[in-house]
Image (cartoon, rainbow, N blue to C red; front, side):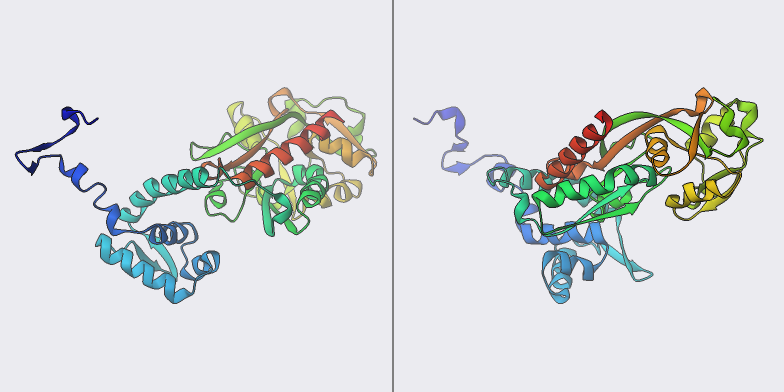
Length: 329
């Protein structure tokens, strides 16, 4: 039965609102394929990389970009130093369309079972040097046990990590001692730890149980090269209380740290769990830091657009389970 209040036809004329007679007039000019190509271009800022990702030819991607430019009457991208730079119109369209595409993907894929065994390709995990030492081997083995054709790639992230790579799909997760990320990103707290000072057991400091703030300026400190010239959690904490710790040597790979410490009168800092692992293999001593420098929160960060990705959910859950085992041991 049709009720009269649902009709908008009077005297044979259609008086319904224009948005009901012709819903989504702008979208009707586009297609899902064009929007997917645009989304990829916004993420890669490269026709070549988008063509590879979409399994299309470069001319096909260029033609679709040309159609979008004509339909929207906007260049969408300009070329600067051989890279695409989005226009304001492109940025506004991407903010709206990317979330819509992610929601459609989540809804359309919800009925399809996720099968890690069928996965191929590369999983990229950004990891601070400390967490990589704990996590790289057990996580790689766990992922490849479920997905034997998967390649697991760890890449370094340090300090005040700005997780732009998470939005460009060059990194699936990032794990480290990060500040709380912005609203574009989601995060889990993996575990809390305490930073400690670490020295050779032959170092004069090795007889100390705890350092004072006055001690910090008298010690030669070793750091990772990525920290050079950067503001860190340490500098922020010490600036607030007008204290200082002089970092006068930097190594390119923090795996060098225990060897460097054993052959010098330097000290360094690291999370307590890492220090304990190093102490299994090297004659090192850990010393408690002043309270203002102790706190360390290990976070896992991912892009909001991957919140509902089954692959990313599997990766996050596997990582959390491995960390839980490490923390419990």
